[in-house]
View 1 (cartoon, rainbow, N blue to C red):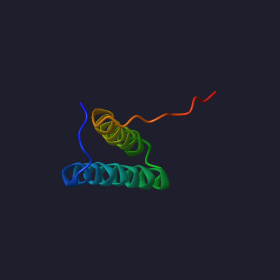
View 2: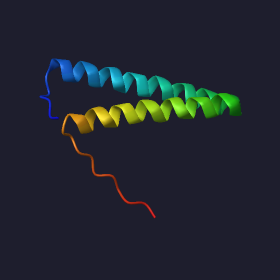
View 3: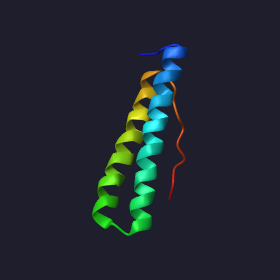
View 4: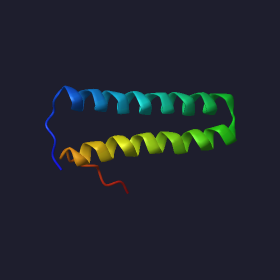
Length: 70
């Protein structure tokens, strides 16, 4: 499914970026506080937010080339 980059797309993408940013901020705070249980939960939340953003982009027809590590 390809969707045009219009106001609706940009608003949705901004919301996904904001959700990822918030999740990362929580992860960072848990790391700084040394709270392992909260860090583990926040890591899952951040990964989920990142995945939602990447799926949204893929569904919009935007392909990202990720480097091969190793």
